[in-house]
Amino acid sequence: MEPVRRIVDGRRASTVQRVLDAAVEEIRAVEYGDLSVRSVAKRADVSPATAYTYFSSKEHLVSSVVWRTIQEATASVEEGAQLHDIVRSITGVFADEPELSRACTSALLADDPEVARLRDAIGAECARSLSSALRPMPSNAVDSVTMAFVGGMVLAGMGYLSFDAIADRLVDMVAQLHPVDGRGAAQP
Image 1 (spheres, rainbow, N blue to C red):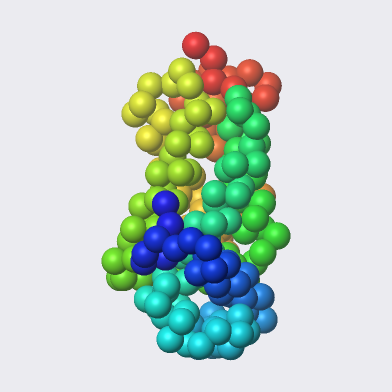
Image 2: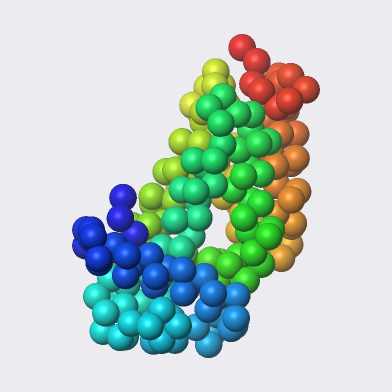
């Protein structure tokens, strides 16, 4: 799934990558309120019109960065990974990038159709990754763990819980729902 509003390839894809990379740099450099598509475009050395061709708003741009980050985090997890490892691959990014965490918390709540599309994709990818580690748990239990994960991410994004604590808490929750082995793998 493309993070941008239209399919891009070749040179355009390179431009989108430059804008996304510049967005990460800008997120690290300024407060979320001071972030703008224009400031990111300047950092990427493209015109604001070019940046707006691909990203409808700063929320869409930040959500695109988060989508790319989640895809990279889940792709880096080996097949058959345990719940703790999968959750840590996702939460570790935000623990290591507090500025991205703060920006993400605001951006993903935006009422923008492009953000909604990416929010759905991010949720689906997280749910897919979690469910792969929770087999053979019943689907309603997997849904509960996924909901708890999302809630934990929101709490951590707001500063009420550390991102590092989410994985341990989810493994403990799964142990209450379904017996697990010492590595957090659901047992039949």
